[in-house]
Length: 236
Image (cartoon, rainbow, N blue to C red; front, side):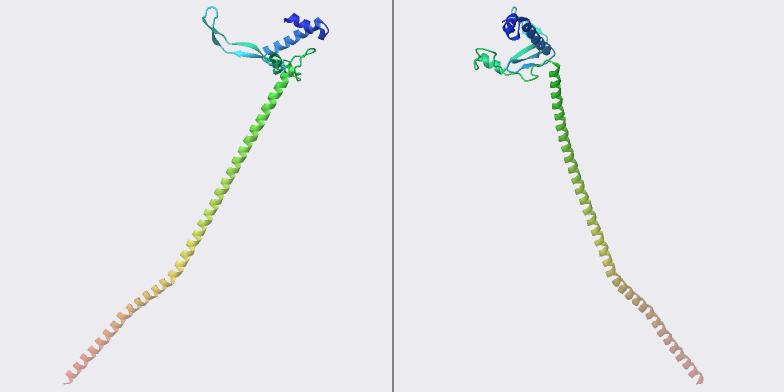
């Protein structure tokens, strides 16, 4: 079937050959323009048209067998829908009369228009926004967890410092009390030692004085005796 035969096949349904030709031309023009622009034209149940990029490669000339380099290019590709495949394979039967029972395409499935492009752009933007929100929420959770961990660590460190300070203060107080107690115990001992030392010094001072007094008394007696002897001798 060529284009003219296709127009004749649908002319009765569209009210005339001219209307059918205009409809076929409009559909094909919309598909070609959409695919050339890089859009994907999808008709549910029938198939989809899309643009495929082929990288540069090497091929062989079938006539000469010579290796030839093929440049990078883009080609159109049609993929049949599941409903179309089922009818061709025979798993589903074609109706005897009327239109083929292919699933009705949902609104906007025939891409290639501005409305469809805008809808696709809106969907892509919505997906990006959702992904950003999810990423932001995850980052916020991580930040909150880090802050909580840092606060706990800081609190623990502060508690340790406070405990250390209290322990140091207790040790200092205990050491001071021990020093005071030792000083109190040492004070009476020092006083007793001082008193004993003073008594010894006084005894030492008193002993020479007594010796001097005894020596003086002996000297006086000796002098008196000599004087008495002299007087007696003179009388004789």
